[in-house]
Image (cartoon, rainbow, N blue to C red; front, top):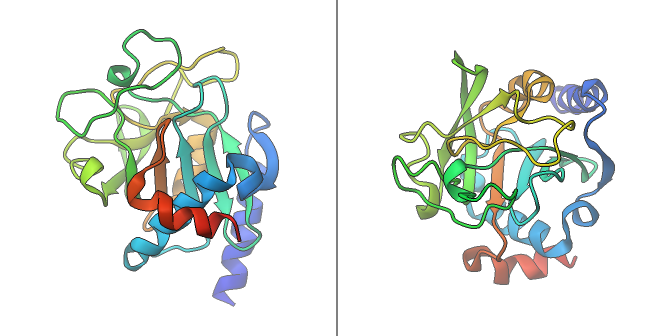
Length: 210
């Protein structure tokens, strides 16, 4: 009964989200089989940290910020919805919309790649926000760096490229308000840049091709 209720809530959530996201596609069609395979390999490696296996999130920072690149996957149907998301100011120093440098260093204002798990929500200067815990060496300081999911006015379909955060994957405000409560406390997030993560790529290639 609990599983049925969760599936219903996922479907309801997607139905209520604003019309600024890309239409639903299968996960491998939405992001490509290689990236999806990597994400599944990361999920398998950190399965013990996942408390909510109904959903999963993949962010593809190999794409331009004007493209929907935050993928919310319904793990029951394997359908993915794509949303706009920002990257860190330090990762895009020339503000051309492409994140090309990544870091786990305090004060870098850069995006960190790797695997995360969502944690608790709180209200801060950006309103409702969601803390993230980094699970890989590339993002182990995520909590200390206050890398969180939050809404931002500089993420909007009215822009050709999104504004830049201080390293956080910021969402359109309407999306954040509806999405954050549903993905808190134990949903896995996998973030990749413009190149495969070799820690997961070899395993993921086989998984993505199934």
